[in-house]
Length: 544
Picture (cartoon, rainbow, N blue to C red):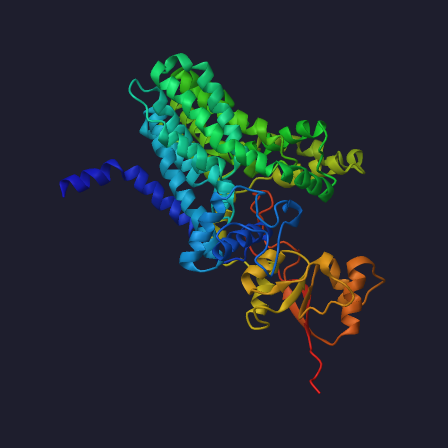
């Protein structure tokens, strides 16, 4: 019994962190419908249950056709996340909860393992606890962990990769297998982020190669060669997809700049998001304390990897924060290290400052509020320039004092109802699996939840007869008969006029996206039900 008490006492910080992260991740995990990207990835995962490997089609519906270059075999993304989802859905059924569960578990593991990694780096339990506390309470990370996609896996695998990398510097025989298999799984979870983290680690190894026992360094070189042989074939397999994806993304928005200037445009976008939600730049002077009191070799490691994450992320045409999520745990180590070493004898002040960083954004956006009057007055100067108008609107939206942590607490304790949630509520008592349906957006999510056959916009013809038609957004004008239409709107009008349909009116929230995993766009509370949706049911001709 005494041994058990001592074990609990010694591991109390990590037990607390596991309990805290679980309480912030699991409540309400399956309450809201899968968002548009969640639906697409979960659809792919569900095909594994049918065919044993990821495919673009389940034989009824299909998705991401722009990336189909191998006769239906899905290679657009690596497969580990999809097999995790498929395994979860095999155990718990094809539900939103089961689709998200593996990634929520990833979150709990990441928090616990970050504690162990930081302890290994800093040999200081207070720094380890603070770093893990920051990650456990990080709302951008929590949103990714609660998302049914691969987005959060780089956080876990970055922690594991560094944990096993540190063993290379021990003055004893090194076993390369843990690092090899971690790298292999990391690559097959999100290969571009793996490349960025690996770049930081390899740069660090080159700098400090003399600190590695020669026999271990030789093993490391052999391991790198074996890893290259194992991973490079996938790079050649996926290469034909890249041109298709870039073309599709480039055509999707005028804000996407695929020229060389695009790299420079994306850099401030990433730094802006990191400052606002992860690491306030105003605290950078405290890094001086860390540099002086932390072992230089490890300090450089936790700086190099985030820097390489950001550098490689510039290759992506959209500066979405999840592309640099691998940097989150390392930046939190840096932040914890700075606080501990700057305020070693003032625990009250240190933890008060940590609480301010977690619960508020005072230090994150406070300095930027000084620029608000300038940005607000620049409206006329940027008018007509799409990119600058977007930058101005984003700055004014984001640079506001708020507590996203409090919003997250509200989110997990209240049922969210978005546009797709309202539609799915209707179809719980209407329609049946196998019915055909036209819906303008989030089709993969809709099909996953209802089992219906989608008729997509590019498949519509004037002769189409969907069993169900859902009109929302700019398509509502068709239902109201307002104005003249062209394109798919004209086709919808012809279908409704040429066939007998029963009309249902449904109160719903506005918009065509249920929710977002982007912290800048995520909705923490249900929007108001102030829009009417039109749902039509085909009435088949009476049999004669």
